[in-house]
Picture (cartoon, rainbow, N blue to C red):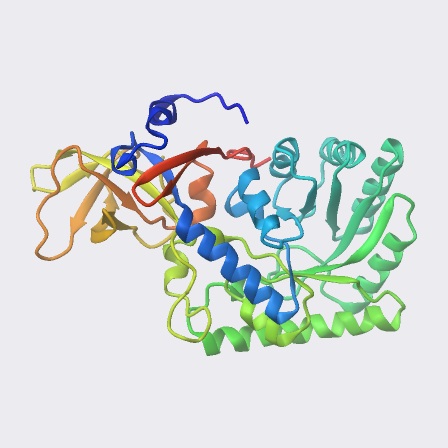
Length: 385
């Protein structure tokens, strides 16, 4: 794919394939460690297969068509998207099986989604109310296409979706009777479960979600509207969802990159997350403060700050943590016994929260070992519309 490169990415293009190029990147730069990334997508795909679950990863975590293609090559069905703009950007990037996982209220956006479906996309949408279902149906008929539709269920997140079994039945009945819509099932997402650190406590919370979901699924079955697909879950709950056997597919997102917010989550009940921190932000030491700290060229315009402070690595070795001293700058707090890093040193930092961090970067610098091997565009970067 031809890309228009500028800034650090344009300078780094000349480094592709060179020995030791990883340590010579112009920064700040989003870095994807391909070995760790491949470990993560393989582990999630195998875990879902063993549990009898389909995998529909959430693109809000990566916003990158090449990552979607690699997830699908590993067995994923397609990708979820949080916003229409995100979905349409990935569609333009060549991805054809996409689910919009949140309700919307814009006729123009509904029409744009219908145009994508008419142009060859398998576009799924969720509905939480009758007027939205009707609007999707009307748009589908105008463009001579069909939407896959999922009834959105509120199983504890208190953000969107119907919360009562009778409401689920009424909405599913409406959807199944509207031309231009194909009733596929339901979506049931409980985001609060994902970041409960303790495995046993997270299991209890997930089982409470499951009890609410089971009541709605039973009502739908009794009404002759048994869902073919029950979609939901996430990185933090995927193993539990496999045990509970209520969901048929998992919408995990963060597992591809991982971040500090997930580092403390006992993912599998064995004391650690098991998925590895594949996304790093490379920054350069550009000076030393009067107190002797190494100052870097990456601050809140390179990292989303809604999470624990990043760890700092030099040639794969942990050397400290980073804290912020401005929108453009960071301060390295070295491990005990470590000196101040020299000016010009390039280090890699984990990220506090991967989803909003990737939204700050246009290009992923893909590395294997000590080499920069590829540049991947983040097509949906900035598409919060």
